[in-house]
Amino acid sequence: MKQSVDAVVVGGGTAGLNAALQLARTGRSVALLERRAEGTSGARWVNGVLDWQFERAGLEPSAGAERLADNSTAWMVSPSGRYRFAIRRSPVVEADMRELVQRLTNLAIDAGVDIRWGTDQPVLDFRFGRPGSVDAQCGHSAVHFDADLFVDASGRAGVLRRQSGELAELCPPASPASTCVAQQLVLEVADRDGALEFCDANGVQPGEAVVQIGLEGGYSTLNIRVEPDLHAVSVLTGSIPSLGYASGPAMVRAARETHRWMGPTIFGGSGHIPLRRVYDRFTAPGLALVGDAACQVMPAHGSGIGFGMIAAKVLAEAVANADDPGSPDTLWSYQANFLREFGATLAGYDAIRRMSVTLGSKGAEELFSSGVFSEPLVRNGLDQKLGSLPPTKAGAAALALAKRPHLAKVVAPALAYMGAARGVYSTYPRRNDPRSFERWLKLGEPWRISQS
Ligand SMILES: Cc1cc2nc3c(=O)[nH]c(=O)nc-3n(C[C@H](O)[C@H](O)[C@H](O)COP(=O)(O)OP(=O)(O)OC[C@H]3O[C@@H](n4cnc5c(N)ncnc54)[C@H](O)[C@@H]3O)c2cc1C
Image (cartoon, rainbow, N blue to C red; front, top):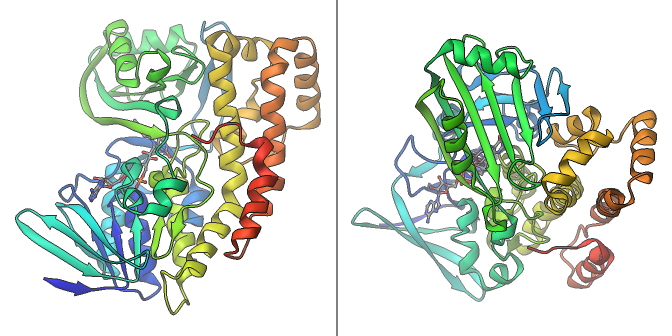
């Protein structure tokens, strides 16, 4: 049956559901097409999220059953286990994504969003370079919507992005070398004494996370947190397997082999995270990308929940009072507002991501032993803000690097890039003007070490 709405969102993960919700809250009629069944879309595991990002995304922070842990301590541990420091009262909230997706679903339905679960193969129909309608399949039935705005929130698949000639060129998929393969499982504790021994051996209390960095290449993590009541343990892993390392799921298997006190899986999941910096452009006439589809992911630790949901809100703000929500100028405002506010953070931490890949496990160990990798530096990263080091810490880090030129050769350019990113993104053109955009690209050129 043919239907007409203001906006169609494809993908019912956290970014897509918030896009549909925030657009509906501004009075738009919205349909959301999700290929999975209700209760199975988006992330289905425990993710680290930040209260400030929910607030910026127009949402209440996680609470109740969704909020599993907060204000906890994380111990950052070097690859060999010899060096460590604690992040106390971490800003990161452990949240159950199944609960968050359900909350967003309920809010979207209450706001009037027409959600079509089990709807796949969306095909856009372009007229003069702009999509005017989408056809999709829901089981054996055909679905058709005319709309002014189409939002691709299908994750790294980018199912609409790939159909737009303009965006397919501007937004190449993240390369395997820029893709993290991660797994997060909540497991039963089969042997409480074994879990306690693990905590003792690592000098932590139950409820505190042991976050070992650099076991499988410089960009990798093995994060183990025994619940305070010793009934469950959370295991989070991630790495870049295309660089020749074990993948996140393989790291979990190895951890379970080593720690036989870990029992059967309660819930969790795995997936690919695009780590490359956010695209320079993620809109075309009638089409906007949000979430992993736009690479709106914090590259330093592959966190995409917060920025994806924020992008959804920024999009709704930009189109709120527009006569045509899909006009190129309106969508340019979404892109410009998002990049002026968050582009420097995402691009700056992309330099840190690339730095950690180059340093490898050996370099990661040296970052710990030299004191360059320190509590304030990591806290800023966990809070997903650029921030700056207190002068004493900055001085100590500079001295440590001066004594280690081989380390400085890799770390100093990354830090310079972070500094430059602020300036570059603060000048992102506000208006949809190709010449200004070309000038902006040139300004950032020296800093664009990797596009993919
Ligand atoms: C193991 C793991 C741990 C992670 N840890 C963290 C963390 O601690 N903190 C954090 O912030 N982030 C974390 N991330 C990243 C985070 O989960 C993602 O960035 C986030 O889920 C992206 O949200 P999204 O809505 O853009 O995409 P997705 O969650 O991928 O949702 C996309 C949706 O689109 C649907 N879809 C796809 N194709 C189609 C189609 N053809 N038609 C209709 N629908 C379609 C999919 O079914 C899916 O429901 C982690 C990722 C993994 C894999």
